[in-house]
Image (cartoon, rainbow, N blue to C red; front, side, top):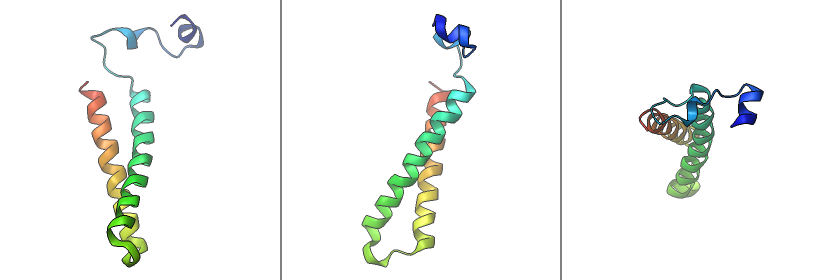
Amino acid sequence: MALRQKLGWSEGDLMRPDCKTCSRLMRQTAGIWSFGGGIGFWVLCRLHYGTRITLPRSLRWGACGALTVSTSTALLMIYK
């Protein structure tokens, strides 16, 4: 924790139990999970449609996955 304070990353607010989550941390986590959700839903789309897959359908599934996973992750972090 002392190293984080010296680098200016945190002032110890993340360690308090009554503290809200850092917005930068929330954005980073939601971004990582949205990428994973997009890839995951794209794989599900490929498995579901097989050879009948089209590019718009694949992109739509990936976008829906990214949006769903990032939104749910952000909500879980806010209401932790």
